[in-house]
Image (cartoon, rainbow, N blue to C red; front, side):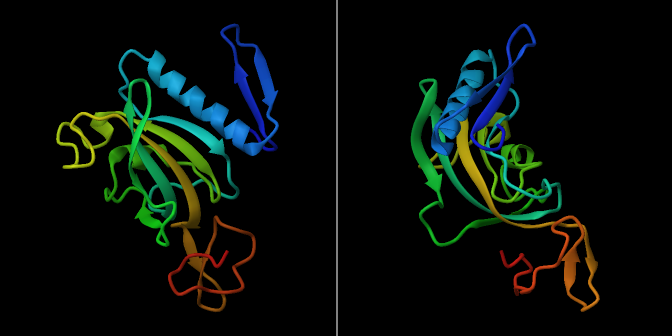
Length: 189
């Protein structure tokens, strides 16, 4: 995925190709289908499949960084998207998580590394990286492969130093500190 609705890829001869889509939605829909096709063509999915839909801006997130995320999760059924089992997209509250803290499924920890603020990514997560043989009662059957579309809305990077005014300023975020400090420690953007 490239800026301005471009996608690039290599074919089996290692020749580089680019496609320009008529809209951001068309580019994202195509990228989702590529990710599903990758999943369906792998004999046994044993790791998380990640496909960027939008790149976002700024520094990529690493372990220890805090994020606020909008997401939708589907069951992967019949080689494609099944029913939605969880989403916070139409809710007021974003999911807050700290990468590497073990508070979310392993597939999220792995799949969100390197994402940037405003970025969207498609994740296809095999059972071993999700809820395994236990599932989630009434929502996720045992041994389910899951599909998530995640969007990073806010980021608080871990590498911080004290600014001259005593407020914490991220050394990896933006060249200038946010003019409006927010009480939760996230940038005011």
